[in-house]
Image 1 (cartoon, one colour):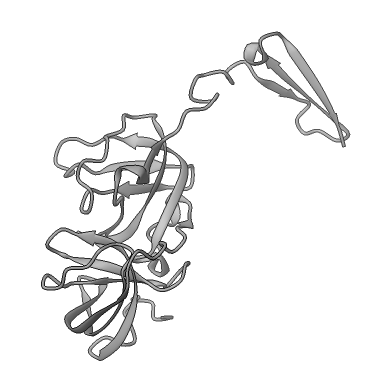
Image 2 (spheres, rainbow, N blue to C red):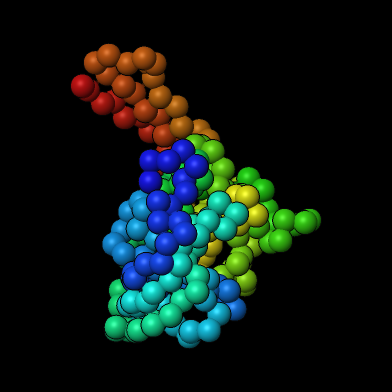
Length: 222
């Protein structure tokens, strides 16, 4: 939709639709997605039908805006067309892009993001990641036993972008959706690296210090 509110143009109507199940909220419904990318996912509130991730579904449902989240409910005629289908490819996004309306209920992934706020207090197990573009909130609505990161841990996280309690949260669905990364930056091996001149014109010298095991300088020409 181009509506500034983000409301679906089908709100108040009954539609026949379908897609691949990408995530399931225990006793709270599921997400379906058709293809990959923006505007391809939607949340389905349905506590009566048993579905599994990877199921391809068709069904009839009413479209509504529930606390600014586009939702399908009143599901009828649900048919599992096939099972065990591959998941749609997760869309790589920056942490600061998670709150964009086109990514609502879409399977997304953030890469190389640093934990800036660990779970604790009254945040229901949520934590924040930031890759330099702004923070994203990681929730525990779907998979509640995801390992908790500490501040400054670097993670790759995949999950469904779910709008709840007035914010967008990336919701991991399984343990493999949360990947704690380890690299030379995490180990502090880049602390002695220097380069110059800045700005460079024809030549740039990069001194790796002890990161290469010895004091090494590389010169790169334009």
